[in-house]
Every structure is written in C-alpha cells, then in structure tokens.
Amino acid sequence: MKPDNSLFKRIQDRVTECLDLAARHTGRNFDPPMVRFNQRGRIAGSAWLEQWELRFNPVLLADNAEAFLTEIVPHEVAHLVAFALHGKVRPHGREWQSIMTGVFGLEPRTRHRLNTEKASPVFPYDCGCRIHKLSLRRHNSVKRGQKRYQCLHCGQPLHAVISSRKRKPS
Image 1 (cartoon, rainbow, N blue to C red):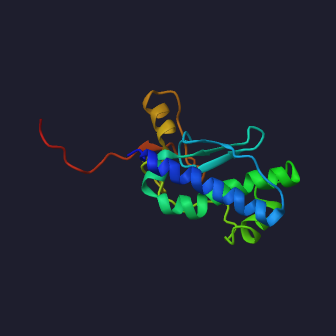
Image 2 (image 1 turned 90 degrees about the vertical axis):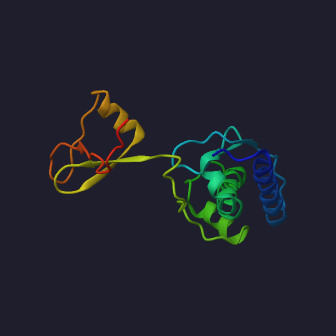
C-alpha cells in the first residue's frame, strides 16, 4: 500500500519542523533538503549528505506513519544537521547523538524497530541445523540457478523450505 499525498506532505512538514528546531538550538539556519519517497528494502530512511537530500521508504511509511513522524524523520534530519555543523563525521557518532538527545529529545537509536516484511519479504531456507531467512534478491538468484548458499555454522547447503499449506486444486 502506498501512502497518500497528505502523508507525504506531513513528512515534509515534519522535516521543516525538525530543521526549525535545530536552527533554534544551534543559532544557524538550514536550507530545506530535497525530500524523496524512493527508499527501498528494509531501510526506513536515509540522509544523502552531499546532495542535502532525505529519502524515505513509502512502503514502510504507509504502515508506520507515527513512527516516521516521531522517530525516523528526526533521525534522518539529525544526520543533515550534524553534517552541516561538523562536516563528515561518523554516521551515528557523538555529534549525531548529541543532536538526537539535545535538540530532538530522543534516544539516539541507530536502527528502527519497524516490521519490514511487506517492504522486504524473506524466504525460509533450511540447512539441517537451523532455518535461515534469505532476501527476495538472494531467493531469486537461487531459483534462477545463479547462486548457492551454505550455512556458516554447519557448512551444509541451504534448501528452500517447501510450504506445508495444501494448495486448492484448480
């Protein structure tokens, strides 16, 4: 499900709010970044520092609007602010952490806790000692015969787990 335009507008407005808050705390104004909704996979958002751009995942946004507004947007804006103030620094280093806590009043978490199953489905594979979850890309490369994977623990090859659900006759 793709979010509607009003949700995109709410995200853009939240980016502006976060930048205004950062400007009040730092005494420095920040240009509005380009905001895109083209992030894919399990990543909720990303900050492209040199391009002064934020990218958000529309699939995850559709199911997690409040988490985006309260956590994801400030997280990504903090990356831009840290870059503007300090230049190229460690992505989740002390400069970014101080912006998260001091400016936004948030715990500086490096990873989100969103359910990513819709955005990035996984496929069960068995080796004999455990079940592994392969990404869609890896699953498709196995199906096409381009790749084979083995367990890092037991060394056995991975085999797709066949669904136990019975199919209806067509």
